[in-house]
Length: 294
Ligand code: ADP
Image (cartoon, rainbow, N blue to C red; front, side):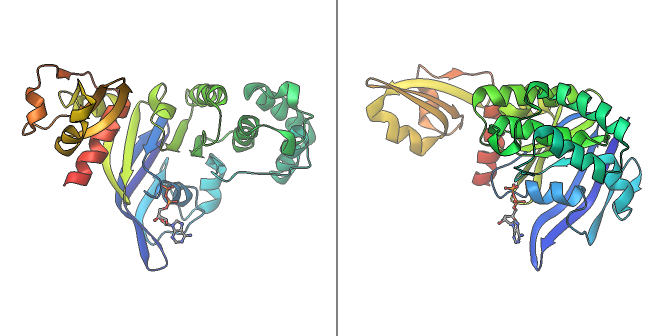
């Protein structure tokens, strides 16, 4: 059983504070860190993988404190957002080079790389140069390098950005598979990235955790709050002033709205208003949009 404990973490760039009193407890499986761009996700992940120094707060991984940098790094694999490597090398060469740096002997390297290429589905592309790979292939190679030392914790930052839908799906499946035996901590602004495989989720907004619990709880939180209605397009502007709209589809002169309910809004009395079962996207937007109101 793996465990990450974060207590009262504040983080700064110089004088500028970007994380405020972060408290999180993360155990084996996939954990999603959701938040808009600029919320502080990358900062939190870089802090955890010891790329940013800390002065406030206590972070432990299986009991090991961050100050024991060498030990921490030996149990973590990291795929940064701006990952790129050795464009002129082939996938195999790049992994082998990194394995040499990790001081793995030749026999171990060969076996490990074979296993990893297979796991990330790059075996048939092992002789393709990194610079000739698609975004999805590069990202999968990134996972292979992060898994090289068989880490107990895999940290991935916005891994599906820039991938096409098929690559995204394949990548999500790969992470789900890895999370069966490790902590996979995944940051994203795309709810779909965590929908299928994550059990727990934290939502970061302006440097603060505004939610941390199971996906089930996140959904329950939005229960009874999400509605839909069809109205003539001409009434759309009036509706927009009354409620927060989650999605909008226009069909001829009719507007289909999905929105967050507001007991005081007149539109709630519209005969065609229907309560909807919240999706994860609804539940996430509900939290974010209600936070804006406060
Ligand atoms: P996210 O990953 O959620 O998009 P970041 O952690 O990258 O968020 O950024 C959080 C905040 O910190 C943003 O306001 C960003 O502008 C700021 N920031 C990020 N990197 C630096 C840096 N190196 N120096 C100063 N401010 C930074």
